[in-house]
Image (spheres, rainbow, N blue to C red):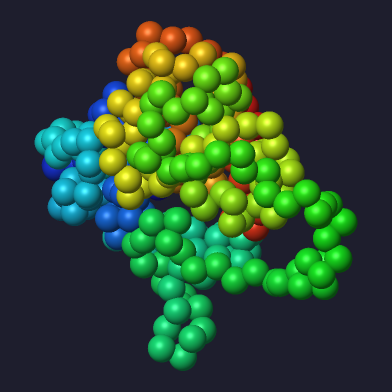
Length: 265
């Protein structure tokens, strides 16, 4: 019948959601665009996009990917081509993202594999507005302590005791223009990169902080790119390891510096 897919026993990717931390490295490794991040987890978009060659497996730091042999839709190169064209068109139209530039510096018509956090994006500068910052005050920085890097802050640092904790992915202060006024004021900040830094080290550090300090509240500030979704999971796992329970407010910032959403978990 027309539109009916062909099932065949073949090799195909399988994702263990319990192990997946949402880092997005498998998304970057899949040239067919068969994997995307949804709700902080990697998921197979469609069976017929996966060629079963397992190029993504070696990129997963958590061992969440494996190849299994089962009944699945046959790999369809034509469907993949249409899928990739659709994705790049949607991205360019909605966000002005150009994942690849050809030699003539014009956007390519094809979508290469690559982590969304490394996609090239061009924004119109708001220089005139920046010259007249209506929300700027002469009070200066809202920072009240040092160090600020997660891996450098001692778990028993005195400024952690009774703190309202702000855990910020380190791109957020650059993307959001009012970081100090809107997020940092009255909080102790810890910053780091959930993609490039040591996840297990972070989890242990947060566990030690939660055990040794009476943290009053936790806010996690992340970027919209998939690899950033790992930060709330790190904080939550650290809290679980410490035996503490506390709501976490998660605020997502767009690459253009807008607040996209706030959720409390």
